[in-house]
Every structure is written in structure tokens, then in C-alpha cells.
Length: 416
Image: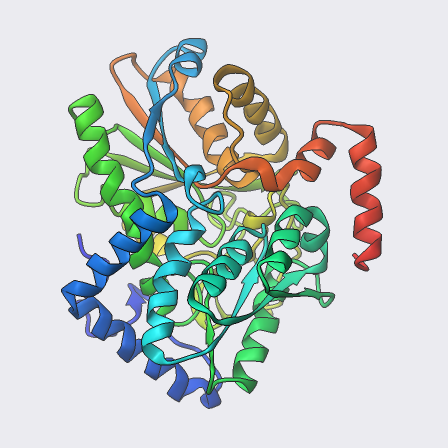
């Protein structure tokens, strides 16, 4: 299954979702980007250059790991994990930003901007900017600046300017809005390195293209390790870049079930979560350059969202995943904050792994379902990032009193 043939003739649409909804002033800039990316895709040398860069700079291919202790503890299916946490900068985000760095160089731009929630995309973008010699500004909600302080530290040390956003909820949605405002006023020299497979076309396609390296590797690795494909593949979904990345390795295999794991937060109810599809609270709308499902009221006003994981605390969802869900190819589920805490404790204690809170949502759903499967079944979890960045949030979540006071002081210092 190709996601990008656009058989109905509407480029940038996945069923009725996607598109390009931007101010007219950005039309020439987005067309320039679309044309450049199309040229890159047609050039076989471009993908090879990208793969070689990821191998030499980021350490790809990332391995898969059999979680024998966790599998034995739970009973049921054998659990494997795709180790995107072992990438340089600690997550799958480096896959997208290094690819966009190559595109940016072809465009002749000298400055990059980005939004970030969990900080991993900002960290990766700052790293890419240093590697390619670009000037760099990162927009980040003030709440996220406080709860993801380690990544802010590294962004600044790498030479990026980090701008705390104090509008709205001071989280990812608001950071995206600020980045778009910047882009409008600096189009000539600036490329917007959008961090997830959302936004106006060609961003969902472009981000998915670079993240497909995860699924390509995982498919080959599972065949080598197990002799067959997994029965289920789990990935967390905020915007959806790591999920669409690993899912692309298995889209043509209907026997492989694909499970997108959203942020259930405190559970169902307005303002309690960021589960756009799993809880059935979202509706179709147009915002931030795309048509997709958003958590919004009947007038199109966006709801507040909540998640223990900053990178999943977002109002919208990848239009490609929505289309695949409506086609019955992807199933959506959600994990609550409490389930994520327990899953994190279990994975740390049984396997010595510290997944990011975002990734732990996928572990939580897999942990709930694995015991119900047969011992001859195999599941694969995408560990999209490692938990180093979450030390403050994890300490607070696991009821460490000293760290709780520290993070509150930091939040106040940034006006959150």
C-alpha cells in the first residue's frame, strides 16, 4: 500500500483528510518546499545519501530487542521492542530532522525554526542545525520548558535560541502557532522543520517518508529474528510520526494488526486527555494547516488537553492515520496516566529499559493485551524515545517529594 499515490488526484489528501490550509502569503514558500521534496523523492541518490547519513551520524539501524523477562512475567505473547531510543539525541525525531536538513540545504535556506513539546524534536533540530551550520530558533510552550528542562539545556548548548511560549495552554499547540507566525515573517531564509506528520502538505508526507526508515528496518529485523512478521505492532500517537514510521513497514501485511496508542490522561471527559480517536471526543476540523480530527467544540474552539507526556499533549492527529483508521487498517486505543506510571515501573524493573513517557503509552497498551494472546504470538512495540528527558516528570509522577518541589519552582520561573 502506497500512502502517497493520491489516487483521487488530490495531492496531499488521504481520503478527505490533509490538504494545505495556509495564509496566501505562505503559498509560494510551501510550493517551493513541495517541489523540492518531490525532486528529492525522484532522485535515487537522495535516499541513499539520507540512509548513509543516518548510519554514520545517528547509529542506524537501531536494533530490535526481545523482552524475555517482561514476556515471562506477563505470560502470553512474546514482546519485542524497536529501539528508537538508541538513536543519537535519544528518539526517532532525528530521522525526520536530518532528512529535512538535507532538503533545507537543497532549498538554500540558512535558518531553521521548529516547535517542540517533549523537547526531543527541539533537541534533534538543534543538533541538525549545528551539523549543517544553520541558525536555529525553537518554540516551546512554557509549561513544557519547565517539565522538559534537560532538553532545553542541550538545545541552548547546541546554539539554538529557545523561546518559551506563554499564550494559551503554553504547550505544543501554542508552540506550533508561534512557529507559523515566525515563518510568515522570515520566508526568504527560513525553513520550518515541523516535527510530526501533521500540518499542511507536504509535511505529513515528508515526515512520514523519512520516518519510514523505522518500519523498513523493523520488518527485515523481525523476519531475521523470528522468521515471520509480528502479529501486532504498537506505537504511541501524539501527532503520529513514530507510529506512521513503523506502520509503513507492515501496511501491505493485513495479518499484522497496527495499534495506535493515544494519551488517555485522567480518563474520558473534556480537558482530561489527548485521545482524539480512542475516546471518540474529536471531530473533523481545519487548523494549523490541515484538515483532520481535533478536540474541539461545535464552534471549532480547541479544547484544553492533558497528558503526563508532553509529546502527546496535542489537539490534532496525523491525517494519514485518521484515513487508515477509517479504512480499518489501524486500531486506536488509549492509556491513562496511571497505566503509564505502572507500565514504566514494570519495564524498568524487569528489563532495565527507561522508555520515554510518550513511548510508555504503547508499552502500557501492549502490556494490557499481551497476556490475552497465545505464547506462539509475537508483538512489537516501538520505543520511540528514551526517558532521560522525563526525569523531572517521572520523579513527580512516581511521588518523589524533592523533585516535585524542584519542578514547581522551575514552572514558576518560566511563568507557567
